[in-house]
Length: 222
Length: 313
Image (cartoon, rainbow over all chains, first blue to last red):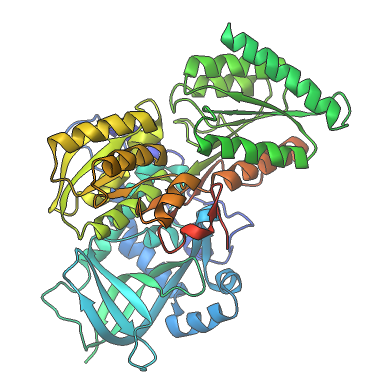
């Protein structure tokens, strides 16, 4: 697989093209300044840096988290917006990826109380109540197994066209998820009953679904 | 011989289609080249593309390469010779197909790829790629959940020459291998074939009677495996497929196979023709070359909405 590395970022554009189909406003500022590292043609042995790991290292804190932070919609407002039509909400706050099978990706933030925490599954989750009615309104993924690639797909930082194939692109999705997990509270910090603030990304395919959010930060408030 | 005959027939059919639809004799033609229509997935794809082409006023030249890159190469030659305006292709090999697509490009004929990608960019105009990796992850997540995150399982692999066989397997393992209590006891190819899957499943069952689940690289193999399990009185074994065929939909509705993953094949093929039409008329599609199309999990909750590789709203 290593033979694919050099191709990977050959075409990463310093000044990324923004098509008219997508929200030109989203990230325009940060993307135009985005300069990704072009990797050397390292031989498939030993010390050659992993360009995906490098991409995650150089962009996660420096670009992705700030981009999510800047564009994040409050989950309560997003819920209301979706009631007026998912596509309409998506056009104002989200990014559509994945063609016919895909959904709207939203950067989201919010605060609420953790009503349930399931650490028994390896795909651990915390359910949160954001409106104080005692029932969960969204689910936060806690890992170590993560579903989906919302962190990869919610901003325009990572363009599929610049990757060799869907496997390389999927590796990026996994690496971003792993990186996010490393920053979340571990099982040693019980969250149930706690009040938290979170920031993350979610993909929504139908108006009725309970958002499954991949957080980049969860902060327990006193 | 067989190929020549088939080509001849296609060309004849093309002439007839052109004459019958009442368009001018010089009606622009779009070639639609896919794997064998024996698999309903590829038939849906070809039908979707042909329907859209007809709607947009094109004649069609529908050909199958049977996953043989040499044959695909010959089909490209005949499409080029026939002067088609565009080629819609579900290719016969990620590396092996590059030369054929390049050849058409050199003759000024643009190719629009569906389903499977090729390893080079800048050769095809569009590659509308089914995100098989994402789809496989969805299937695997459901499989792991159904298995209660533990137990012995077998995997049926597709045809090795098809890049998606490997991609799906990798996607499955990307998820499943994160669960240390999930034990892979058998991993065998059944070449996308229902009958082959039946025999392979029989032998796996003999060697591993304690098996709890089977994850299959496609739906036809899932059907074969489930039939073998049913014959052995092992309907308790969890089977998950991939493609979203009507056969598996019906099995899911009856509580047989538990889940599959839908690739929106019909719509994908239609999108490719729309892009080809735009390119023919304006010289560009306005879109990136590589476009990923997500897959959708189908289980008992939404199986009823599935029809011919499309999910109703």
